[in-house]
Image (cartoon, rainbow, N blue to C red; front, top):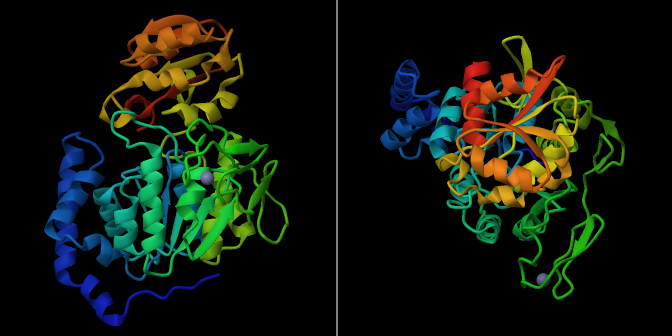
Length: 427
Ligand SMILES: [Zn+2]
């Protein structure tokens, strides 16, 4: 375990100074106005104002905190939430719970948790190197990289290269918690001085076909993988999963009964447990904290709309869908899929053709959202019976539930479609 002591006294005085307090107050005022005008939750715009008025505010507010940054294509919000819950057993935690994961959102979260001794922050993959350097976070959790937002995201191999440079050039005491099952992530973590490997799994392998070090084809053998042409291979993990138990380096099994569904969340919990152990939170305390988490900013929540229960799931790219399909196989629950293609979703919906919808062949589904027609074509080709194509997601859910004694509907939505539904049913 590494204990890091924060800032010197002079830094502490600076961050307690009236100027930074004023900047935070102005940022909060702007955030409150944004909320009043119905323009969103205000964390981004408020944070933008803080960063504009005080460009080093993220670095200043990070000093002295036991800070963990989490990045991944999938699972970063959930894992960050689990880390925050576990760190909270010891005191207040700065946490960007609404998923605002670039510099402004991070600034807002740090300002709200200014007095907290710890921070758990999810960070956008592309913004991670800059924010890690700025915050000098003691722990960075690197989980997975796969195709996402095809029009915006760089090739995942370029993201991995940027992460690797970050790890290589870190000139502060940094512990990296890395997924040993993702070759891109492994390659990025390798230069780290202190790397804690977790066998967190990787079902979606289409983005790790080639060796990131030498571009030859990787060989996979069960969970193991290696490059036949260079030295890159799966590192021996210190942490792993046995069924629904987390297994730390001491080899003991810690069964975890999460309220969040799916194997993927056990893997997220293992990553989170490894991260908080670095800060001295023991696995049993971490697991107890994880079991309290019911939803993650509306994900997995069951909302009741007009007497019908709707379970909300976020599925935003092929890798996240690959994990979700296990959760929506219950044919007794009608399946509604909502797809948009706005900026935050990626404007190119061709990723739908990479999702293994064939695993749902023979099932009934309803297509909704702004790109419902693209989706309906894809589902039909996969052998899914598209019962309805309806513009409005809640109207689609109502149609789906009409078939009689339907207890609940599963709705899987991608990013902006999910946010729009959540705003109508949860908030
Ligand atoms: Zn290689």
